[in-house]
Structures are given as C-alpha cells and as structure tokens.
Image (cartoon, rainbow, N blue to C red; front, side):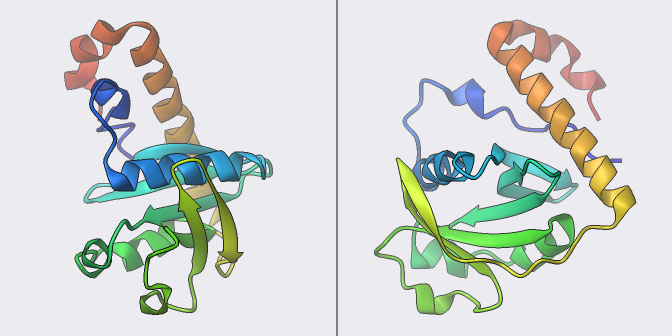
Amino acid sequence: MFPVCSYFPMSQASAPLMPGQLLARGVARALLGFDFVSLPEFVPTQGLRVDLMCLGPKGEVWVVECKSSRADYMADSKWQGYLEWCDRFFWAVDGDFPTELLPDETGLILADAYGGEIVRMGPETPLAGARRKALLRAFARGAGLRLQALRDPGVISLVSSALP
C-alpha cells in the first residue's frame, strides 16, 4: 500500500547538506529529546514526500515540513495533503523566517542545524487505526532499508526494482 522508501538520503552522504536538510537535522536532534525518532524525506503515499516523519514513544506520528525561506514556503502547495498522514503537523523554520506567513492552526518549531524548540504545538488529529498500522509498518521498513543500505551500500541497488 505504501512505498517502502523511494529515496535514500544517505546516498548523498558526501554532498554538502542543503539549508532545508540542515534544518531537518536540527529538528530531528531536538525531537530526539522528546523521545521521537525521525526519518527524513519519507514517502507516506505516492506523490507526497515529507521532510521528516517522526515516531513517538507511544506510536504518535508527527510530520515536520522544513522551510528555509519565504520562497520555499510559497512554493509548497502540497502541505495540506500531509495532514491526513499524521497525528500532528509542524512547520520548522529558522529564526529569520517570517512566521506570520504560517497558518496558526499548525505547529511551529524554531530550529537551526544543531537543535530546535517547539514554539507552538500542532493540534492533535489522531490517525485511524488501520492507517497508523500501515504507516508504522512503512516507517519500520524504511528505517530498516536505510540501515541496511548504510551497512551494505550495493545491496539496495540489487533489489530496488523489487521495491514497491
């Protein structure tokens, strides 16, 4: 039902990180302090790719979209489609971002490459049980594939045609 993982960020491990990727790293570090683990550039369904899919200790699913500039935010026309794939939705921006652009009914995290702070909690809209189960399975498989790709970089290309 869900793509396991159509993108392996570690394949660009030697490339310098882009501003949004640096922001995502800082957010992931900050959320680890709340016992949330994160997968960057996760595909919850065909046609959508979230910057961070985050899993909490009780199975909570948060989506964080990282915006490095006003233009980056204005170009994002898919974010409302992410709402049905999480229990809470957040924007992550740096301290220079004009936060008045962001909808009040969404969460807000101020961050940089090294950490962040939840400024506004997004409203909770619990996922349906069947969707949560499928998402958690996809999250686990995606994390496993990424770990395997780190340990054995060539093996994923051998089986990538067999991945959903």
